[in-house]
Every structure is written in C-alpha cells, then in structure tokens.
Length: 299
Length: 299
Image (cartoon, rainbow over all chains, first blue to last red; front, top):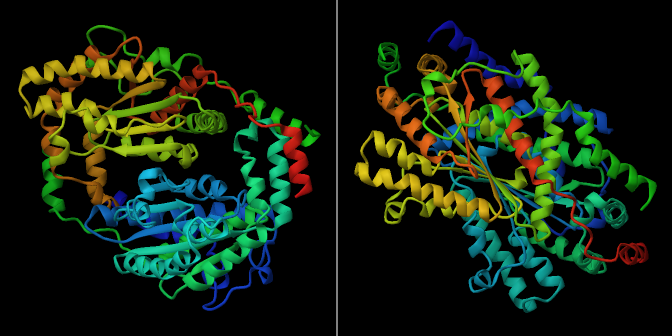
C-alpha cells in the first residue's frame, strides 16, 4: 500500500474522532420501556440533548460524516456477501414530520444505499393478501438502509381507530408483527422503530401553516382534519401498539417532535448508534492486490 | 393568506434570485450535435464554466437550493395529477464516476422524490424478455426524478464489444431505443442522457487509487481490467450509440469527467436547466382554503 493509501485509510478511520461524539445512549433515553405505555406522560418538547436549533444543527453537521461513513461501510458489507441491513420505521400523526425526516436525515446518506417506501392505503391487490405481504416485499436488501414512511403499524392504528377490520383481527396482529420482526432481526436486520410524538396544538399550527402558504397547499389534505378529530383514539392505538410491540429485539423509540431540529438530531443519533453497534469492518480484498496492481500498471 | 404565508411564498419564489444564475446553456454546450460522433475530439478535461474545485463547489452550493426547490415543485406536480417526470441516464466506463454522481448530485435532492436504479448484468428472468423490458419497469412515476446507473445503452455497448448478441441485433436496437425514448418524452418524461467522459490515463489512476486504499478494495473488480483492455472498442461503441441515439427529443450530453468537481457542477446544471424548462407552478388548492382554515381552527 502506498503512502497515499495509508493516509486515506487513516482519514476514513479517524472520521469518528474528528466529530464530537453523540451524547451517550440516545437510544436508551428514547427507548420505550417494556410494558404498558402512557403517551400523555411523555413530553413532545425537546428533552436531553441540544437545547436550541443552532446547537442541534451543529450537532447534526458533526454527526453527518460519521453517518455517511457508517452507511458506506454497511453498503460495502452488503456488496461483499454480508447480510446486515437497517430498517428505519417512521410512524406519527399527520404533519408529525415523517417527510422532514426523509429530507433532512435520510438525505444525509448516499441515496444509492437508501431505499424509501411510502406506504399508502392498501391497493386492491394488496388487500387480497395478508397485511404483512406488501411489507415483506419492501424489506431492504443486504447492505441497504431501508426506510418505511408509515408501515405495517398502520394495520393496528388506523385499522383499529376506523374499524377497518374486526377488533379481534387487530388483536391478533400484534403477535403477528412481533413474530415478523423477530424473523427480520434474526436475518440480520437492525430495526429502528420511531414514533414522531407531537402535541395536538403543534399539529393545529402545522395544518394552519400549510393553509397559509400556497407553496404548501399540495401537502394539505382535508381528510387530515377528520383524522385529527380522532386524536385521543389514535393516541390510545399508539399506546397499545408501542406497549405490545416494543420488544427486546425490536424496541420502539418515542421521539419528541414538536421541534423539527430536535427530531432531526435525535433520529440522526439513533441511526449512528445502531450502525455503530453493527461493528462492521471494511471488507478485505478477495483478490491479490500486488498482482492486480501489476496488471493495471501494464494496461 | 397571513403575512407569514406571504413571506414564505416570496422566499420560495425568490430562491432563484438568491443564487447566482448558472452559466447560460450548459445544455447547449455539452449536447452532442446530430450526426457522427468523434469522442477523441472531445476533451475529458474541464471546459467552460468554473475553473477550479473551489469555484465549482461554490457554484454547486449556490445551485443546490434551486435544484431542491425545482424538484419539490415537480414532486408536488406529480402528487396533484401532473404527468411530468425526469429521467437522468448515466453511462460511462468503469470508474468514470457514476457512483459519485449519485452521491454528490442526486444526493442534493430530497430522497423521497428520487428513484435510483442500478442496472447490472441481466438476470435469467430479464434475459427471457426483450432488452427494454426491465427498463420500462423502472421508468419513474409522475413527479419523480428517476436515475439510471447504467441503462438500456449497455445493450448496445458491452453487448456490441463482447458480442453478447449478433451484430445485426445490436444494429436494430438503436432504432428500438429511439422509438422507446420518443414514447417516454411524449408521455411527459424529460430525458437527460449523460456520458461521463474520462481518459484512459484517468481510469488507470482511479483503479490504482482503489488498490492503494483498503477502504476501497470492495469497489475494485479484476474484471474491470479486462474491459479496460477493450478501451478502443468501447469508445467506438459509445460513438455509435451517441451518434445514432442523440435525437431532437432526447439528446445525449458528453460531460468531461476527469475532474470530479467539474462533472458534479455540469450535471447539477443540466438538471436545473431541464427542470426549469418544465416551467412548473405550485399546484393550486383543490379545496376551499378559508373553509378549511375555519375547520382547523375549530378542531
């Protein structure tokens, strides 16, 4: 290896040292404890961590190169026969910021290594299958960071609130979800399930903002106000989903999301922590480096 | 509309005024003229435009908010019943920087609105269909910026150089491609076909760089040296493809790509120019804004 190569290798290895380490255990602080959940006891306002927008944006800018390097390492791992992947599941009420997470957090990574799926109301074809059918088809491939904007949890959220299926069917789904997610984690998926937790007042303000701004009218859907009228029912449905489906292998994280800058910092931190926990290495060469060097030089 | 809304609207509209306008007609300068092509007469070094890395990076940083706003407008258009979309086709020799374009140019846009397809050697299933079958399946939906990392052009490039099909079959494909691309543009697709043009010396240096840097070994493929041995054949195949398939409705652009910073600036500029040419507007509300405001206020 030439000096240039060694320097590059050291620079890549040192990326983690160049940035301020994320506050320890964001995952631990935001993880939903096992057992019943009371969302009304969880603040939607920024908690521990950066205390204002400027500090949060600085922290994200410092985490960004680390996140990008870790994601490239995961991608390289997938290209070299590895089986690990990450799946970020984003849930939250309308206007809670799922789109903002895509733009400002997922957008920090190389788009080649990310695969976003936005789940809408099921199509007729999807309804002919069990509720996990369309989900299984979108599980990320090896080395990829998959992102779900809404997910199989809609099948125990709106499905429960709107009685789209019998209550007993909803009741069976929690266990089905837990078994499905166990299969995922057993097969090398690191699951990061995030609920974007906003207050009803914050939602009202965001809906009004969309109405005030003609460049945002396309984002406004009158149906969102109908769902808003069921706020308490949705909070209860979330409490059940989080309580029954936050497991050792696939915990839920509740991210205070009234402040967009806090939300972005928290989820960036969760991704970095989960990728670091994979403890991946750069794949070794599966060819003779010196021989290849001679071939290229001679070409 | 409140004052806040008016301000926001003006800020969004003014994004174009805040940035230095791109040098006029990058598209015109890089477009392949109709007729035979001689790639040896086209420099792989930076041409008109920014003259060094720093100036290019500054120019890209100035274009980035404009590109993001235009892409959001295209996305909004697609969500509101519009049919326009953009398809960036990236072709080039190994190491020419297709991956870098994904990371540094496509990465400037909201990942929710981008759909990257990386075409590999066809699978057995794909080989059972005509060569455009797998391509048609990946044409972007309305409002989306699709990106092809390699494309249907491989079927007249490696297919010709490696005689994967009879020469007469290759010969028929140029016309099939032109008819296919005419269908695309007729259906609302803005096609941006880019050849990343590097020199053989630059490729040699990039292959050696990958060998020198253990964090890049996973990107090195000994087979690339075999393809490199056919350099002249590939250049000839590119000349035929560009000559026969650069049309009024779907021209080819040859981007000098020995300097990564110039390549990134040029392709960012091409995207901005093509999105601007769509002349999209923010979709008007399809609901009664005042009535919705009252509903939200009362909720």
